[in-house]
Each structure stands twice: as C-alpha cells, then as structure tokens.
Image (tube, rainbow, N blue to C red; front, side, top):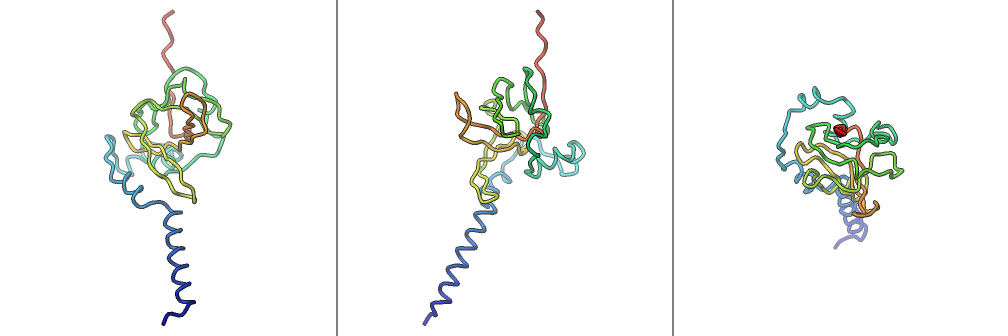
Length: 170
C-alpha cells in the first residue's frame, strides 16, 4: 500500500520537473530553430571574427544590451536597419517609433526577413524574432505597439546596422 507522503512527494517532484522544463524553454521550440537551415552559416570562430563581442553575445547567444545603450535608439534618419550578422534589411526607418523601453522599436519588419520562435526563458512566454537569413537573435515582439499593426518589435540595437537612404538628386 502506498504511503500518502510518498505519493505526494512523487507528484510534487513531477510537477517541479515539468515547471523547470517550461521555465528553461521548450525543447521542441529550441530544436525547431536549431534544425532550421539558414542561407548564411558560419562556424563559431567565423562569427567571432566578424562580430564585435557585444554583437556576438546578442546575435549568437541570445543576449541583450542594457536599455538605452544602443546608438541606434536615437537614429531618426531615413534608411534601413539591417542584420549586423549578414546585412539583410530587416526594418525600414519609417516603421521605427519611440516606445520608451530603451531599445529600438519598430511596428513592422520588412516582409519575409524576420523569423519567429517561441521563447520560454525566464519563466515567460514570449515570441523571439531572428534574422531569417542567418538566424541571428534580434529581440522579441509584443502586442502593445502602435497602429497600424499593434505590434512592438523590441530589438537589440547592437544586432543591427543602419544604412542611411541615399541623398535625393534634387
């Protein structure tokens, strides 16, 4: 006959294990991105040689920058924000807005250039966004942005490079 304490301990242990797996991320979601093939692939040594340490931490290790630390936060010129890993254009400057969060924010990416995956780190369920060409981590998307989309792409500025629009010939 089962002792009630053993049964309760077993149930609590299984619950704790399930909660731990949920908090540390979904193996299926992590496997989806890992299994995904990207057009631009490099060895870790090649990425480290190309990127600054801060870019590497963000793009390759899913890191984040301190709020307010990116020079792109105050970038207001016309142009395109591209991936620092592969230079794929990701966001047009006319979709950038001041969210007050301390990170560059956009309400819409350039169509087809940003991928999404489920992120369950830190005990939260969020949608991570990454460059569809090289898989570099960019940040997260939230549903508290302005019209017309209602979305806020909260992006690590050090994962981007800015290309100003060409001066007009007038």
